[in-house]
Picture 1 (cartoon, rainbow, N blue to C red):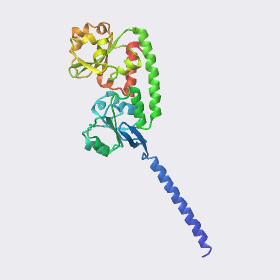
Picture 2 (picture 1 turned 90 degrees about the horizontal axis):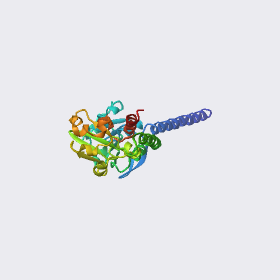
Picture 3 (picture 1 turned 60 degrees about the vertical axis):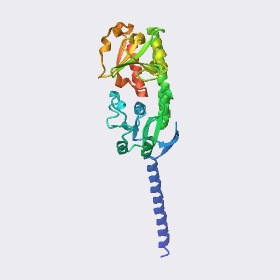
Amino acid sequence: MKKLFPVLFILVLVLAACGNNDSSNSEEKASSSGNETITYESEDGPVEVPADPQRVVVLSSYVGDLIDLDVPIVGADAWSMQNPRFEDALKDAEEVTEDDLEKIIELKPDLIIGLTGLKNLDKLKEIAPTVTFTYGKLNYLDQHVEIGKLVNKEDEAQTWANDFTKRATEAGEQIKEKIGADATVSVVENFDKQLYVYGDNWGRGTEVLYQAMGLNMPEKVKEDALEAGYFALSTEVLPEYMGDYVIFSKFDDADTSVEDSKSFQNTTAAKNNQVYEVDGNAFYFNDSNTLDYQLEFIKESFLGN
């Protein structure tokens, strides 16, 4: 019996050690399973969000930023779902709005992102950590970096912002050298039987053309659209807003009669074949993914490469 006691004692120690190892392994698995959080300083104060979000619902225009940062999206707004360039990335996502609370619950998000003024904000916060941004409060580059901070990928986001600035600046210099320093560029959109012209921070390539590249907008555009962001106009006054070069954003169901009008055809841009048509759904946003696409389109249109 005396000989048996030391053996039993050693066995107990071994089992305890194994138990501690199992506990330690369980803790490691738990910490690597996506349960860790970080504190994000939002516009409304600190929010505990997943350190590695895996089921994000996006109720605004930041889908492209998350695609570039390789963050899984389970629900997105209608505009993003209609973007042909996002189709593959969103093939398993559901279209949702801020009113689709039951549908959002079913998606089991671990993070919800939207714009300031989001309806049902308190109810959405009960479903998952919810962060909102004020459109235009940050410039297009800083906004991407801020999205990076939110999903714990700030370094990746900043690297993209630095690289994009370099690429866009270089392309802008090449374009100005080719078309002349005084040449003007307009961004015109034909949407829902209405024409619009845009300032320098309303997507559709405006950030690339005016902010990153430093190209000129016509004086009328500067007067009426720069501060507001956009300006609705009629076919009759369109020539006053058409630059020497035009990015013309169109949607599939848009009325195309304006392109056949004398007002359009008699402009410098139309006469010189310097109107570059784009798919409105693909060119709409100013997220990092779309900005890259816009930059390549603009380079090809103006420089032919």
